[in-house]
Length: 102
Length: 227
Image: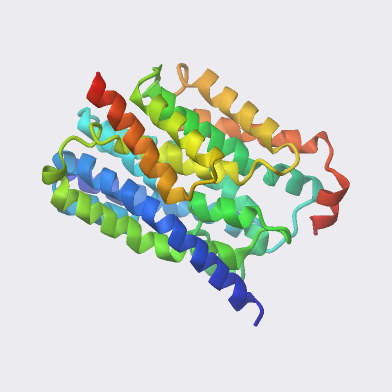
């Protein structure tokens, strides 16, 4: 149980430091124009990376499982312009459905 | 105080994010309770407030890993907040301490919303949108911890599909920007290619390099929107 609380303590400190690092070191300085062109594309690059690793990775292994079905259902919901809450519920239902059939 | 409008817009978007955030928090509570008991998951959600890292450390601890390994894993899963914090920095206010505090409001959904703003990174949108997500995240965790037994296996309910679906919804709103589909494609390819060879978290951090396709040349409309 000690490991859990040490982990929480360590995670609190490191998360706060990582989140504060950019704001404190860059401060209020304006970044060069080219930096904004890069920063504007951080979100799609990072979100896409998170989506694919959360769906197809188990630790360091690549697998296709029920999560992929969930993502496919989410993609259909997004194409139909469903609200975010509907999108996540449809994804859960899709993954659950595939697991129920397996 | 025109910024009050932006806070309100942020709050409104944040309420939309709050329900999915609560569902992800719920799945964290269900998964974490057998690993760390009923108090620790709720405390972790209240003081760490970083979903991917919390899932990551729980997986490490569940597999019998020690605290150092768990913390290192959490740090790697949080590493994307470094470039995200740099992007937010010029918009934040005050001295170093206040900036450090405002930087804590950077969570994926709010940051993506605030970074999309036409007038550069939008501080009020960020803060407004994060506000409803925090209680939703903590309350969702508590419900998952306390009601997890009644819910049954989180995977049977498909709860692990919620996180990527949430991010897909956020990504869809990004894709109309110039070069955004290319950045998404490249970022995804980098993350998948590096997954087998690097510990979890690092592939996502390195995938942020895909944003450099922005240097390929901005369109006129976008250049005008830049400060």
